Image 1: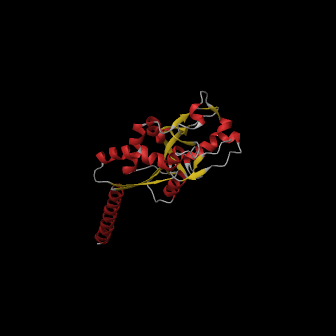
Image 2 (image 1 turned 135 degrees about the vertical axis):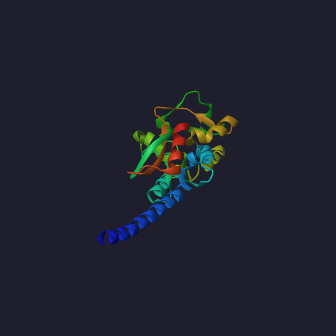
Image 3 (image 1 turned 45 degrees about the vertical axis):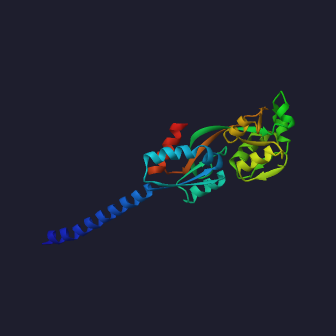
Length: 236
């Protein structure tokens, strides 16, 4: 009789465990069906559209949202669980996050064709670049952070002539003669090819950088986020 009573109570526990397991499976399926991505503008505009197209072919039922912000905001959104995966372009891995390099990039100095630098036969020196008032991105931009780190030994740097929040705004201002600008080579490739901007070589500094995917430290991307990270690594 005691065994029968125990079995009856145990069956209720087993049934509850099965219901809990089914609920967890449903939550996991729901998480796999949605992916929130936060990315810096260079990555969001120039690399992620292709990666997300490949992801859509693998996961046609997944709803993906992409937010284009600066690198600092992308990192914050991942830390605050507002994004499942982030992509940043700063020179350092933001605190509290793990990362994986997904692409290499290079910053370039650009000027309009009529600018004196466009006619120079020799590269400009890093010291001259540091002393020049530039059209810059905002301070939380990964592009600006990378440039300031590259020129750190030549501080203090000249104050920017303009501070703009998007790469396209910087390109337009440079093309209109507001001053030289420093942007990703990917971001200005079409303008340089069309002759709207000229790339100016710089001597004495390394303007290459790594572009990274980021996620909370101590975790690993799972589900669709893991698959997007794998696509980005393959395309590298």
